[in-house]
Structure formats: structure tokens, C-alpha cells
Length: 237
Image (cartoon, rainbow, N blue to C red; front, side, top):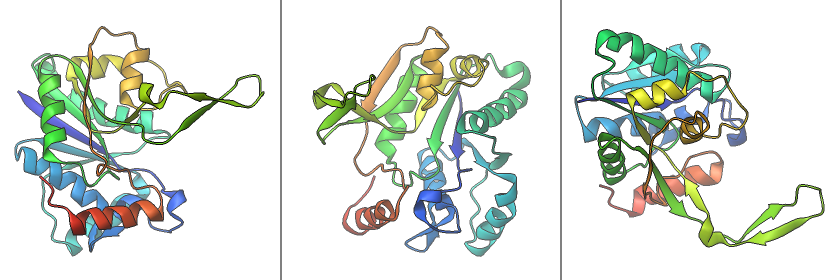
């Protein structure tokens, strides 16, 4: 069974307030994106890693690889107008590479490049669920109180936080499922790859697996400090 990991790293990272996109910022001296790639390579050295980077950032990425002597095998695909288009570019490349073999059992993980602390358990459980024919997604329970906006502008109302889950990546799919889902046109309702599959109305059971509070998406300076703290105080597997 072939395995692919598509790691999306084409964002500008404007909320970090830095000139360098967040996926390239150093985390304990090493670019964030490299941690994400290492997690999948550690899981399976035969996995095919595809990273999605904007064309204007690719030369900088090559420079970082040389500087850090980073030699994990990977291919690069240009990012698109939105995350949806970036993922589609990667999926199109994979589908073309598979050619006549695209109907064989292939699993594709899609992961945020700015989630460097994903652990081996999450990767393993999502791939196993996808191997059983499901679309797999890690989640964690909501811990904060939640209020929802009332559509007519009449304020907000409380909701039961026990009914809500925070969604993480990697999200892993049988190739036929994700290739088919990305044939539909872009919609603003797409918030992640699981929503693309759901809105395509493709018949695929969604399997929720246990995520981790360490598996944060680095978006703000606080997130970067939190990731540093996790690395300094925990033993990750």
C-alpha cells in the first residue's frame, strides 16, 4: 500500500507579525516545517512526502535545506490561490504520478506545515483508519466556553461545549475518496479537507481519532512560545 503525506506550507503567516512565513520560522533552531516532515518520515521512511510552497518562497526553502543539511526526500508543488487550490495542486501531481496505478490502494495524508508537534500515535491511527476505507480526522474536546452568533444580529447564545470538537491534522483519506472530492469547484464553505469530502457527498465514513493538545497549529507568537515549551518539557513519541 502506497502512502503519501501532503504538507501544506504556502501561507504568508501574517498573524505572526514577521517578514518570514511562519512555516519557516525557527523552533529551537530548526524551521517549523522540517519538524512536520520529520514526523512523517519517522513514521514510515518509504512514505512519499509532497510539500506545497508558494513559488516565490521555494528558493528560500532550498536555502534552508542547505543551511540545515536537511535531506529527507520530498517533492515540491507550487501553492495556489487558497488552501483548497494548494491541496488540489498536490493531489493532481500525485494522481499523475500514480498513472495507471491510481486505482490501487493508496492513502493520502494532508497536514498543516505549521503543526510541527504531531506525534506518531496520531499519524498511525489516522493511517490505519484510512486503510480500513474511512476518512480519518484527529480531534480534541473543546475546553473553553463557547457562544454562537445569532444570525439576525441579535447578539449571541451559549452552546454546550461538550457537543463541539477542535479539528486537527493530519487528515488521511483513501486516494479515490480525496481525488474525487477535489473534482468539485471551490467553495467558501471549505474549512479543511474533511469538509471538502463531506460537501462532495461522496460515500465515505468519517472516523474521529484522538488528537493531542500538543498538536497545535502555530499561528501567533504565543503558539510559537507554547511549542517551545512543549519541546522543552515533554518526551514526545
